Length: 391
Image (tube, rainbow, N blue to C red; front, side):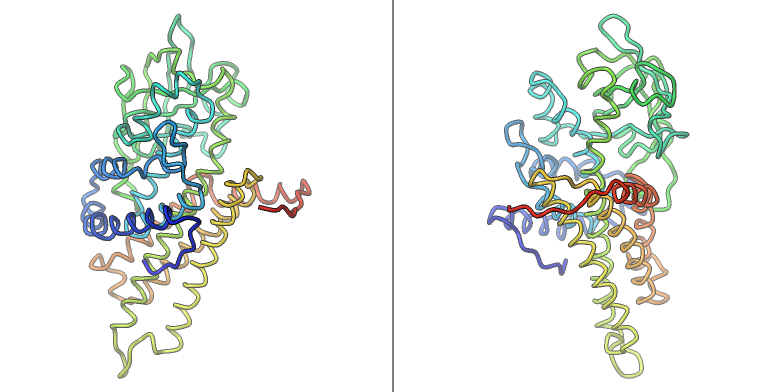
């Protein structure tokens, strides 16, 4: 990756160098084949867990890496630049751990977090349903208390790592009717729970190395000590983690765009027409310049939001802006990368066609970009003003 970075510590610099080396030597050579064969790289997540990457943004007390989001997102970017499925999967795993980290009891954290943050267990996140994507309050999956257990029934759609994960963070309705946002609760459900199964994986345009499936709950019995927070806290837990999740997707989108740009520049330096390299043609050079500007703009916005988060300042609006800008720019940059390569860009002999297919979903998951515009617009309507703070 050609990106220049300014990192806060020597430790962070060493970490990014390690991740870049792993991405270049271990991930890049495998990515195209795995995506073409739709093979889920479970061993890669095990390796990243051993390196400490899966728990980077969480405290060291429970096995995390203790890194600020400013650093963690740049790690995701490095992963996304060579293999978007792995970058997205790493972000989803971190989101799957968020509920336990932020709302679990000390006993729950001590019991489960070390394996989750250390990479021994891979997580998935179950919020959306077929009829309730952008409107999670309309969910119908239920969790009924029965003695020392909860019994879950329903279906959770679009689950990244569905059927591959070791645990699922599940939002289910413990009271009220669909539309009642106060009756939703959060559960940490083991993959081997009787009555829990995965439907056939979705057949997707891109991210084919990342398994996405609907998870089915048929009288799935979950011990009551796997409830996170109190009954009714589920939507609060889900929404609290979404801003951080949006930053994760923004970072992967930046990496994906950077990877496409790098490939396009490499090709433009080597390809000759009319007696000169195509990068020397002004029309083509301007396309590459616009691609570079788009990548740099998205990176700057994403890191700005991350730095607000790291300082404990409000960052919801900035997270939505980062997700919107980074993913829209990734779609434009990857499309332009295909154009730069011409006919070759449209073939599977080069990865830019895959990057283009992968970029599209970035505009959809973790809240569509139309939802991001609603979030941004509402924050402006509330009169949220900027402020000056030291630090």
